[in-house]
Image (tube, rainbow, N blue to C red; front, side, top):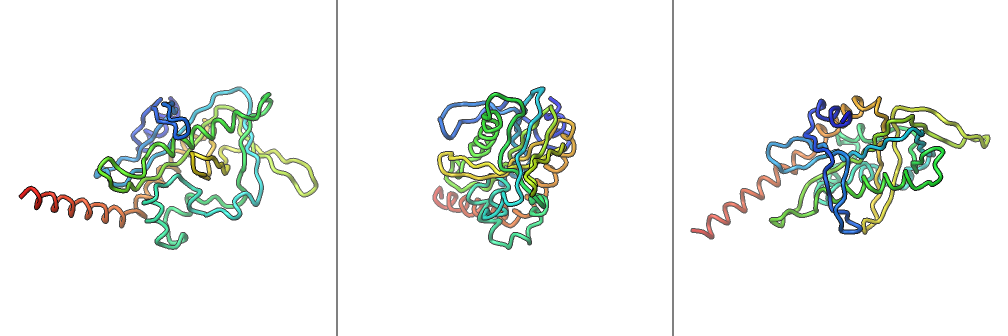
Length: 246
């Protein structure tokens, strides 16, 4: 409820406990929160997919300075449909207004784990769940057969302390409590997909929702040329249909 309120206050259209079809199993599953960016034309689809985890135990993001090496800077920042990805990569990545908002300077995480847990699967399961929902949210083509321009960003919200853990040059581990962190997660859904997932504490929800609003606003600006192209395609298709009917 707190997450829903934060994203509503940031101007998103929020659906709580919404369902999606798991791309791996083909079964319906539930995600905590879907925050859609309102679009008057419905041509560019942008959303934040949020999974909320409640636990008394802290969560730990394992980080490394080279976790993002050899990964595409833009492709790993959100789950893009093919059309949205192509539209953005027609330009240099540093020309995109959204790039500074998506690219976190410095180290990045490579795994999420829960402290004191008897299994290391809890962080993996949360990441797989939210990434699967992002993948399933927007199909690559519409019911009419046109390619969809869409992007979904995965977010995990925790209500217990969040820490980053990094190995120091002297072999010791450094633990730092943070309000939010990010880690790169890869899964086959069924094809391989790699994406950074933002983890935020409940106390940091307002700041995360504000960041998400800034990302959505700038993404929409960067995708304006593609929106115009889609609108032109629809007009041409409508004109063809009118000629056929005549």
